[in-house]
Length: 93
Image (cartoon, rainbow, N blue to C red):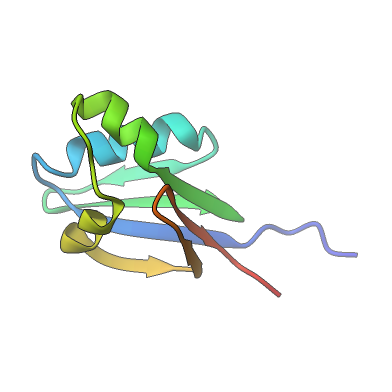
């Protein structure tokens, strides 16, 4: 049996709208590795990466629509499972 992990990733534009999203991802995914570049941020995680609406709302102090994530999304890798409360990337078999 293989114990290797599959990496999923999310790449976002770097701007004022994405700063709290990135911070929320870091809080909710302690295993994630954040690669900051001048115009984008790429976040890698083994097996699973989650963006939680509630965490972003707690950081910005107002209601936040998870669908607004797509406006600043550059690229991603993994299967998407999206609800009103969470955006999850993971590889499904």
